[in-house]
Image: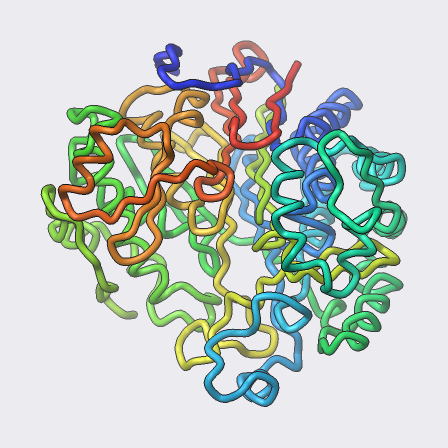
Length: 536
C-alpha cells in the first residue's frame, strides 16, 4: 500500500483501518455485519446480514425482490455469483406487443410487466451454503429486528423516497408499504416495515424455501394476477442462481475482475484496456487531459457493451473477443486528445442499487451488490410479506438482437461488483452504485488509486463525471472550473449537476493493507450516501 493519504477534496469521511471491516451505505447495515463477525462469522456472513438490513434501511434502492451479484475471495481463489433473475415463462415479444402495441421497444418501466424473477434471496442462501460459518437464520436477525421495531429515516434516503413518491404512489402495494400517514416519511421519523419482518422471518426459518417454493412465492403470484402481471410461483420455483468465473483485465500490474455478462462490468474492463495505451500518471489527476481520455475510453466501452452484452447464451461474440489486447489497442487509436467524439460499436472477431463489501482477519473478502434497479424498482410491493419488486425486465428489448426478451432469459444488467488482484493475490474489494455510472465509477476511482496513488477515501471523494449519450456528460459541481471549460472547448456537451446522489453513484472500498491478521485493511465509504465503514 503506497497511497498518499493527504486528501485534497472536501469530505465528511476518514479512512477506516481495521482487521475486520464492513463498508455499506447505511450505518445500521455495517453494524449488522460487524455483529456477525463478533459472533464468529466470516466476511460472507457479515455481507449477508448487511444486505438483509439494506432491504429495510434503503428501500429506495433494493428490497426482498432484488437481484444480486457477488465476487468472493475465499482465501485461495475468486468465485463469482450471478443471482440476477430470468424472465417469466409467459414473456415473449408477442406477449408485450399484444398489451402495448407493435411499436413498443421495451417492456414498461414500472408495474408487474417490468418484474423478472428476483434473485437476491437465492443469492444469500447460495453464499451462506458455500462459504458461511453461522446458521443462516442468525444472519437475518438484525434485519428482522429493524423491520419490526423501525428506524429513523436518514437524510439522503429520505430525499429520494420523497422524490419517487409522485410517480409511484398509485402502484400496487406502494402506498400501503412506503407511505405511512399517506406520505413519505420525513427525516428522523420512525419507519416500520412489518410486512418485510414477516417475509424475512419466513425466509430465515426455511432458508429461502418460503420465497421460492412456498407461501411468499404464492403470495406474489396472487398479487401479480390481481394487478395484470404474469409472474407465477412456478417461475420462482424454476429459479437458480449461477456460480460463474469472473472475467478480468490487466492494468498497470493489477487485474480488475468483474462478473461476466449479462452484466455491464465488461465495460469497465474494456475502458481500462484502452487506457492502458496511455500514460495517465504523467497528466494532472484532475486536469482536462486525464479526464478527457477516461471519458472517451468509457464511450468506446459502452458502444460495445450496449451492442453485444446480453444473456451469454445469446451473445454474438465472447467476452474474450471483446477484451482482446489487439482489438482494444485498435480502439484506443480512435481517441483524439483534442476532440470529443461519438463512437459506434466495434467489430470484435466473432467466434436504484446498494453496494457493500466486507473483509475478515482470516483473509476472506466479498464484493456484493443488490438492486431494485430504478428507484423502488417496479413500484409493486406485495404487502403481506413486504416484497418490493425490481423492474429489471425494462432492460430487455422487444426488437431483434441479443437482448430481445424470451422466457427464462436474463436481461442486460447494470449492477456489478468489482475485485482487484495483483499477481493472483487479493488487493481490493470495491464497487460504485448507480445504473450506468457503475463501470464509469469503477474506472475513475481505480485510475485515481493505481495511476495517481490517491487513497481509497480520496478516490471516493473526488469529483466525478458521467457519460450519458452522444457527446453529453454530467460533471459534479466540485470539478475544477478550468477542467470543465477545457472539456467544453474539446466538444463535450457538459452539464454541471448539483445533486451528487442522483447522477454520480456512491462507492464502498476495502483495500488490503498487508497480512489481514497484522496490518488488516483500509476502508472507505462514499459521502454521497448515508453510509459507514466500520471495523475492529
